[in-house]
Image 1 (cartoon, helix red, strand yellow):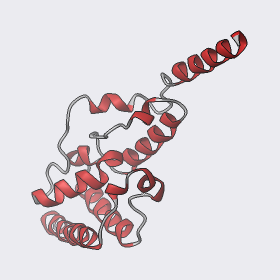
Image 2 (cartoon, one colour):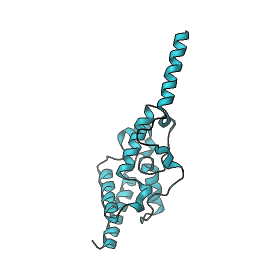
Image 3 (cartoon, one colour):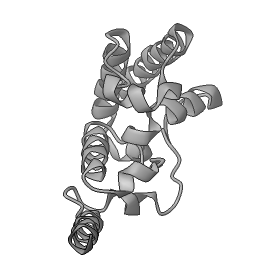
Image 4 (cartoon, helix red, strand yellow):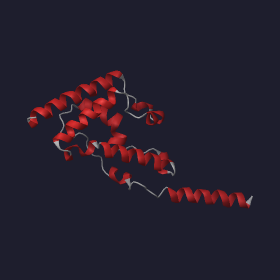
Length: 157
């Protein structure tokens, strides 16, 4: 019985210590304050809210970290996905992208939604509320087209 207790305690200690390892940096620190998304974009409140709700966990600094994201090894998987999402596009850093990059990102959002690639299937398994209805997709796709057009005209391209 003592061996079992010591073994369980040792495993628990290893998991606790492993949870302090952040392979992609401490992504939780970026959440220190709430940051607005799509600053500088011509995005109506409805679009901002929808994108924040459906895309913000992976593509902004406003990630809602579930309890399992704090315990290794699941924390590593979650942090990896958030790291990758922010690397592809961070909606909290919209003003830091050049106009050409914004135009490109809007096109990518459009394509990913139309092809059903976002939100990712594994994310939807644990977060079914992030599923986009057809009307949600249409709303966002229509906005991306209009915003791309606005940016192209403003840039004189």
